[in-house]
Image 1 (tube, rainbow, N blue to C red):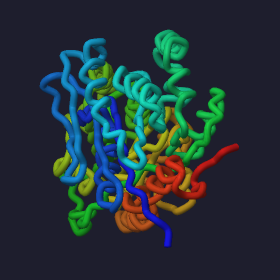
Image 2: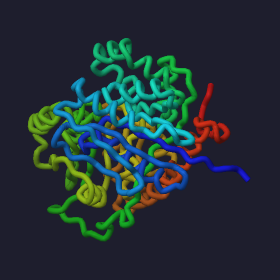
Image 3: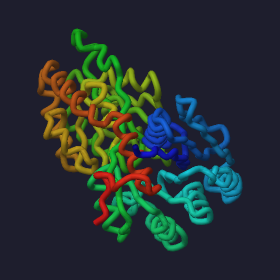
Length: 393
């Protein structure tokens, strides 16, 4: 009978603030799911600015520490981060560090701690090595890569990609370690739609939802241009998400400049119940992004029974394959085509697409994702064979 060896895994992520986007949710949800399995202890270390809200775990077995500083880029935050990492119990049978993201001080200190204490390091770049991401703030990233980031990446025992496209990006920059391809999971809403029986009136209308960070990468300006061209009667575009780097001002100015204020509304940053309510009341979800390593909001929309339009900048070719959405080129014209086609469908046809999407996305159940991740951990620790999700070529 095989002996099951306990593992202790410390997860490190730059921020647990909802404004940080997908990782603030997916990392905590992953830790929650991992902690429900026996023979594994999960800790979560993050940092934030003083006063920032945080997304916390819901499972008591997850021990988490948030190091607060006036600036998450300040060098003095390295001391408390180092202390927290140094408290890792290295006397357990196996200990791993799972580092989510790159560039930030907390990620660098985690890599340093792994090297110093000879702890196997796993790095999950979470889209930060995608071509679009590397092309943003290029000078700073080239400098960071030369000073520390390349060394940190090459010191990892394993890298994790969330899709085949991210795996290709990792290989493209010359990293040759094993790479596990494991998608993010998604939490399912027990009551995905509450408005299936609503009666359409001109006053109520139908809703297209955009929900993500308000950042140039997300392609919102293309969506606004497409919306002006389509000029759909009886449809309204709701934009939700945190402002990232001041891009919201440009978005609001563009709405006014295009003269579409009557049908486009920014509803602010939403999370939790309000976010679920927004999904439930959407007839269509649009993410016109230039680059995503996964695009968790696409999975969330599908889990709520909403058909999706997104671009080839996100790894969601299955939208077309499983007839639950549209996967189009980036740009204004492809969005115009997809919007017109989606809006020409009947309510029942869109609802059928949403039902197909909800069934399809069940493959991203967090429990299954956690099992794959544990198989990887045990392989890295030397207690299990090579998992099918790990690519060594």
